[in-house]
Structure formats: structure tokens, C-alpha cells
Image 1 (cartoon, rainbow, N blue to C red):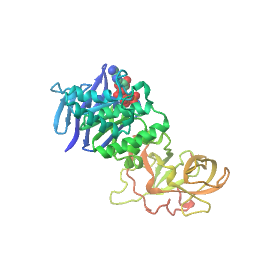
Image 2 (cartoon, rainbow, N blue to C red):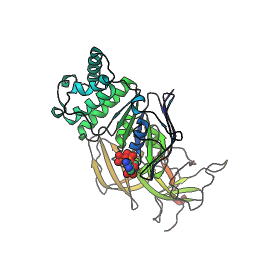
Image 3 (cartoon, protein in one colour):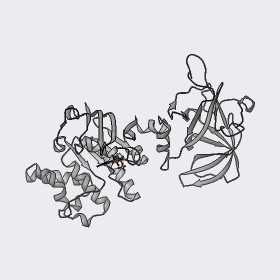
Image 4 (cartoon, rainbow, N blue to C red):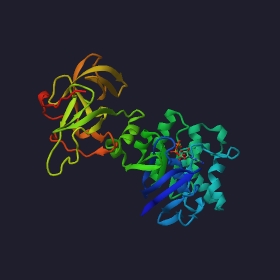
Amino acid sequence: MNAIELQGIRVALDGKQVLQDIDLTIKQGDFMTFLGPSGCGKTTLLRTIAGLQHADAGTITISGREVANGEKRFHMEPSARRLSLVFQSYALWPHMTVFENVAFGLQVRKLAKADIRRSVEAALDKMRIAELVARYPSELSGGQQQRVAIARAIVTEPDILLLDEPLSNLDAKLRVEMRAELKRLHQELNTTVIYVTHDQHEAMTLSTQVAVFFGGRVVQLDKPRELYKHPKTLQVAEFIGNGGMQMNQLEGVIRAGGGVWGSHRLETPIAVMPLAEGDGVNEGLEEGQEVVLTIRPEDIKLYETNQAGSLGVSVSAVFPSGAETLVQLDAGGWQLMARVIGETEYEPGDTLFAVLREQQMNVYDKKTGFLMELSYATTNNQLGESSHEDRLSYSR
Ligand SMILES: Nc1ncnc2c1ncn2[C@@H]1O[C@H](COP(=O)(O)OP(=O)(O)OP(=O)(O)O)[C@@H](O)[C@H]1O
């Protein structure tokens, strides 16, 4: 059974449409992340699922039960939806001990004292903070407070756990630690989790599914790996490419018999991809169509000797970081970043040969921003065997 189904959800706040026709299915046991820039509606959708915000239109079904219907003005109380919400601010009660904070939700339900104690201890154990049981929030670090907030959310054994940027108030080291804790917790509890963040790393490392939001719409729903490999629009590619996950962008143009990349403002193209023809392949391409190609640094391989289809480049800067080295390259005036595992001996000014792995390139229509499905005439891992003479050259 699906844990949550959203159909046609619309929400306006202060006369402004904040969510527009959201359709989304979240499966039981998924770790679904709502990812997107600030103000795109992630929190509003989370609050709408929780029942803290009413949908103007659309339906929400949780575990097969309709909990909201905008058209019918039906909105089930948040407490009846069997879900728990953890906010960015931990919102612990300062005058209560850790035990009392975590026990509160169970006391409201008037459970037996012995059962409450057992459940609270189990939740604190899961969050690895059993020893803090008698402390007050003011005696806890930020990370410990967030663990208490999560213990409080899981103690009621909700079907669904909603987490709104729960790590954003923590320092970098604690964030990494808590990320691992959340992953472990999800695997252990097998609860459906919805997680809001604008941090791509968090989304990639934690989620089973990611919904990318822009302007109140879900623009892509995918597994993290797919999202990383094939962003459906240039906007998504650029967003995913921020935050340390660099993405190279090259402008190009479609010419008869080939796609020409990185050449838009250059006399000589830095790369030409022979496009396959016939049987409807690559139909609809227009001569002169402007495109943007993206390729990740790890998909550019560097060689010291000339390779078939390689590109002559010069090293403009080297950024070692221990496990890997980023090498900035100048390709005929175009800057590219390549990632090399470990350390390198390369130095600025060195001449190298770069091979762009064609299967890992994404090509977008510059006008619409949508990913294009292109088939190339060569399927080897390199640029193709085209010699420089074969390349279609044109001037600015
Ligand atoms: N109570 C409100 N009244 C009016 N507009 C609101 C209200 N709450 C949010 N908004 C607007 O709705 C839009 C979506 O806000 P929301 O908080 O859902 O975005 P978000 O993607 O979660 O952003 P962030 O990552 O900054 O929290 C924003 O433009 C915001 O200004």
C-alpha cells in the first residue's frame, strides 16, 4: 500500500499560489526528500500533509485513508493522521526533563506509567541518549537536543515521520553524524520518512526518492542516483550542481551530422558528437538549435598522451583535497573542471588530453531548458573517432 498519495494539491497563502497541482505518491518505507531552493513550497507541502495547513484543492490519502479533501473542505485533525513532525528548531519544553519531553505525547494518550517508561527508554536508546534522561534541555548540546526531538517524534510509533530541515541548526560535524543516525534509524524503524532540505548532499545520501521543487511544483521525482545522473531540466542540473557537486556546462549548437559543444563562441569546437540518424532517431532536431551540455568532473578523464577523440587542454589550477583532486582546465578558452581520485603531479601550465565520457553527458535545449534524448553514432566511451578535419567548424 502507498503510505501517502497527493492528488492535485493546491495551496494559496496571502493570495499567492504557493503550491500548484502537486501529484505525488510516497511508498511505505520510502525516505522521500523534498529538495529545492528557499521559498519553493517544501515546508508548506509538509505542513499540508501534517494537517497544519489546509489545501484549497486536491486530496491527501494516508495509508489508504482520505485525510484531506480540498473541494469538500474536509481536513482531518493533525493528531488523527498518525504522523509525527520534527521542526528545524527543536522546540523542546525547557521546564521538562528529557524523560518528560519524550513522555509527553504518551501521557496525553493516558497510557499506563510502566508502558510509558518502557517506550521512552526504547526511544532514547534508539537515539543513543539513554544517559541524558534526567537532564533539562538547557543542559544539552544542539545535537543532543535534536536527538531528543526525534526521540519524542518516534516514541508514539507514527506511520510517517515528517522532518523539516532537522539538521540545519547543527554545525558541520554534527550534521554529518546526525545524517548517519537518521539513515540508521530509517533502516531500523522502516517508517516512511518525508524530509525537507535545501541541501543536495543530505538529499543524495539519505533518500530513497527525491522530489525537486521549483516555484510550488514538483519538477522531478527520482531516485538520488538518477537525479544526479540525469537532471530533467537545466534548472535542476544547476541546482544539483551547486553545493560542492560541481557540474561543467558547455554551450553548443546542433549542426548537420553532429552536435558541436563548447564551441559557441569559438572558432574551433572543443568537441563534436556525431549524432545517429534514421528510424526516427534524433528526429525534431533543428539545424542551429542552441543547446547546453553538462558533464560532471568525474566523467572527464585526463591523459598525458593523445587519445582517440581527446581534447587538448592546459591545466589552469589544481585543487587537492586528499581523497581527490580537482583539476581546472582550459579548453580553448573554455574552463572545465575534472576530478581525479587521489593526488596528482599536474601543475598549472601542463598540457593534457581530456576525454569526455559521452554516455555521461546530458544535453539540454537552451530555449526550453529540457533534457534532450540524443543518440550518438558512436557508443564507445570516448568522443568518437572524428578527426579534426571532420569537425564542423564555424565562426562566431
Ligand atoms: N504564512 C504565510 N503567509 C504568506 N506567505 C507565506 C506564508 N508562509 C510561507 N509563505 C510563502 O510561501 C512560499 C513557500 O514557502 P515555504 O516555507 O513552503 O518554502 P520552502 O521551500 O520550505 O522554503 P525554506 O527552505 O526557506 O523553508 C514562500 O514564497 C513564502 O514566502
